[in-house]
Length: 388
Image 1 (tube, helix red, strand yellow):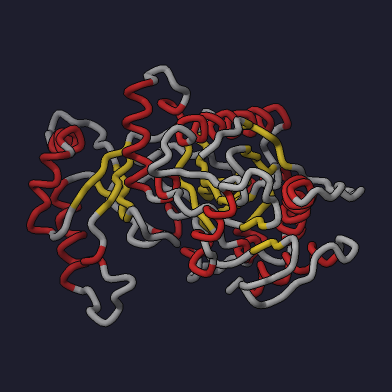
Image 2 (spheres, rainbow, N blue to C red; image 1 turned 90 degrees about the vertical axis):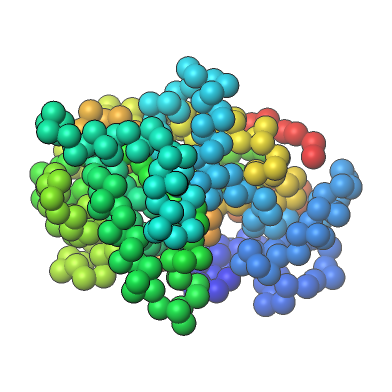
């Protein structure tokens, strides 16, 4: 793994298993049982698909699926949600996923045409500038394939959106092709949740939950109860005229200019003050129900999500809680940044990896689970095996 933080923790957990695993740096092995824990680009998916056709072959296990864009790309997931909710209008996801619109935009000059396709959004933006509108509805713009809080923008009108894109295109650095906004065509625009849960103990700073989800084979899905609460640096203010990233954006990577330390920005959810046990458990139950429903729908969409029987994957799901304790799913991330947990809460990631080894890796290779005293656990929410 490229991340030394993750690499060290994985090695530490595997080395505890009584010499069951021999850790090597090469991605090629001729040994009997092989666990590939590599970056996505380094995995041989052709080999995994080939071996997966043999129902008796359980010698190889990898740490990623190949096809999962329907979950990870924001525009693909939004498209899946539109399709799924049209088929299942009573799905619980309808109230746990913010109103979302897809914007296909190659250049600011074509914004009018793009909004004509997203006509429902266009109508709301037009209504926001009418004098009869007492409270304009805010939206947040997100690039479909970028992460780490890249290009997030809160706006109320088409003029503001046009100015954002025009400025970005005019200031684009042609030498930085990876982050070149001209290379981003797909965007999602979500209704901004204006009433997030605020806790006075933490200076009424906005926060979101990072929940680790483990999917294995084809398909079981687990929710890990070692949940992180990631805080913004400054107290939240619902001011439609200003967008201060340190007040509105809770991603850890967006807090680089913060005056707060690691312990103030990252907390464990189940230890948060001002939330009694009943509320915490209700929030956790909502999360489990949402995750189950998402994978129930995705499991039938093999062109955008195709789990493999000889693979597993850890995702970082982001959720927001509003002032009424309703949970909203925001997005999913593969290869999540475990380092953002920090040193003081590294036990959460250590126990996550212990759970993965005990409940997924050891049983897959036919080994008995070790007797481990692990405080935090994986909770099975979806279990339906299919044959590709």
